[in-house]
Length: 334
Ligand code: ADP
Image 1 (cartoon, rainbow, N blue to C red):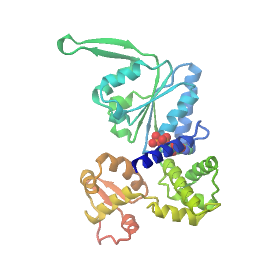
Image 2: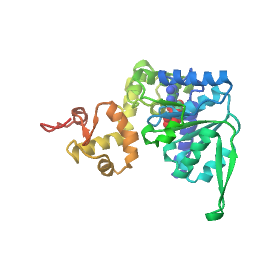
Image 3: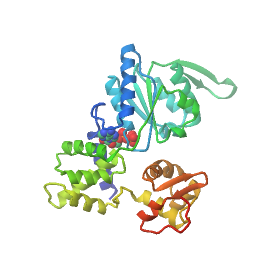
Image 4: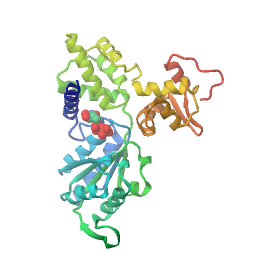
């Protein structure tokens, strides 16, 4: 069984990369970030210098990795990919940095999860293209300076606020990615359907887009689930009924909430009477890490007006009670 799911996961990853837009023009939405970024890249081409370091922040699946790949493609530069959790020791980072070539783009995903010593090494590397490699231990330890070729760091984080100030300040440009509108998600889906050679009618696209949680990765994932459903049911074209039947089966509700979203709201309402309750208490109640609740579930719930952040803690809004089919208590605090 694990073999099957591993193969399934590999296929999902392969499909995900096949659907990735390869240039800024194919990248749907995010007008503001796209325009700013294209200016940064154009300027560095004119100056014939490596581009400024770029920080991309926003919830998972909104296109941070895709943008890093596009930056490399637009700069005609090689791309190196690593992530904060993979860099636990300063030495891990030193090994990556010392093997970069001139103009290379270094993408560090989840950059807020890097260890402290690595982070401090990164400050110097970003600013002066130099690192100190410490050799030996104790009183005999010496720092050997090492020059680096100029490179561009593209950092990604689910929340810019999780980054220490000194690191944030060293990026020349910060782009904050927002959730996508339903119209934008429809564009993403139309492009993907074309690449996958799938027939979907307008109502079908609208239904999938509306349940995609403002997130292109989810839109593409749902499209593949609906495709499976259509295949098994021998449908020539995916319509509203097919899309909604398939998505109901995968427990994506009409508003796009997934299981984690719903369990956060359900805990907030049934265990804490709608709040206010502190974030960490809420995370324990749903059995998730604080960071997951805060950066994966909350941003969308807040945007949808289902959850509020108050100085005293998280509260479920009247719309949240209603969404779960419950009646808020009289005098509830929203
Ligand atoms: P992140 O790094 O923010 O978690 P990714 O860049 O990996 O997100 O994007 C996930 C998937 O969503 C990609 O495979 C890509 O196909 C799709 N995607 C993301 N943003 C866009 C976009 N603006 N237009 C089209 N597809 C997108």
